[in-house]
Length: 262
Image (cartoon, rainbow, N blue to C red; front, side, top):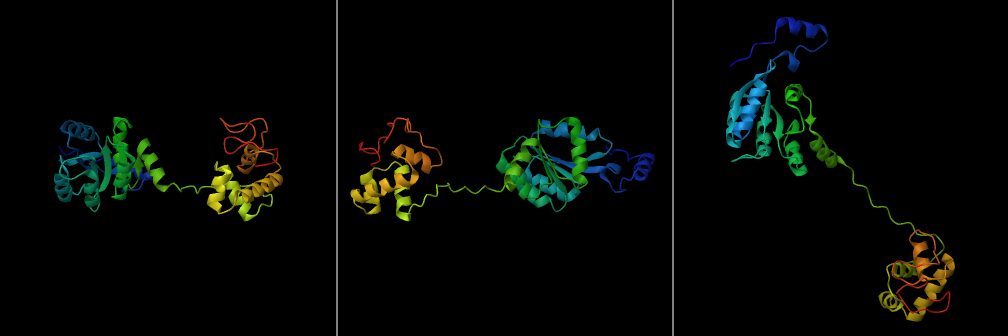
């Protein structure tokens, strides 16, 4: 049944109040309801039919039928489910956006689905259970008037779309005048390498590695491997303990040697 037009007195009052004459609230917005669940479809049609500002001009139960109905009726707004037989809502949105505004209305709040729908041209994305029935009229009118609407979880997915990834911050090493080779050796010490392993990786003799480590200790102002690693990784030396499971001085990397030796 065709709903009555907006009363002239209401229209005149709104225009006098500064509301544009073509605002969606001053005319009946036509709607096509698309959902493969007949109960949901019937409920939506009932809600829309109870509004003085909205009018259902078509229904569809699958994606192919949706395209045919929207093409034939060219409504102001299409309420469109996502998961449907034959063609899903994202595919339908990409096609019918040329004729109508598209408001996705579905149970799915999966971020990838929200992003796909918006990229396909949807003008809004509402998730069942995240809005009240009386808010549906306002949502449809807003979309018809050019607004872009999102439910809470859908908004989170959109924020993630445009979030600028934070570049990893390079670790800050103490500037104590270590040579490039000494820095390389110290990185390997911090990675838990033993002297023989460092010697093999850097093509050095073990004696040369020990000499480098002794010079590193002197420049860092530490006496043990554990203290050196703590300072190198941005902490402070703790002579009382090394990392968990390690001795107070050298940890498990190498044999104990006189203080100040590697």
